Image (cartoon, rainbow, N blue to C red; front, side, top):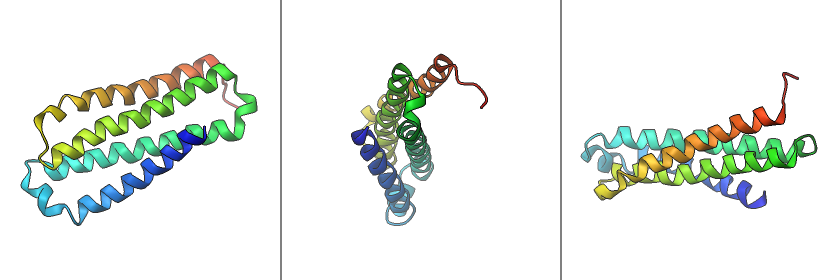
Length: 135
């Protein structure tokens, strides 16, 4: 849990830093690449949304773990790990493409998207299996 929370904090920090860096220092570079600014914005949006989602799941596990079955905890941790991997693959490849990086980054983006989707699917499965109600 410690490593996932640390990675989540660093992922969020990097998301904010890259968002600001792209909006200011890299603006001329991104403007020179077709759709560079829009691609960077998408990368930052997905980056930050999934860092916050991972943080929410991990903090919920940390504070309410005694009420969550161990198998469900593992699914939630796997969801957070999937989101973090997805951020690095999805957003990371988009950052590279926005900067005019190699075209081989293009096929990496959907792999990251698949990791992000898998994380959300794991949250749904974990919630369903836990028997959580509307309390």
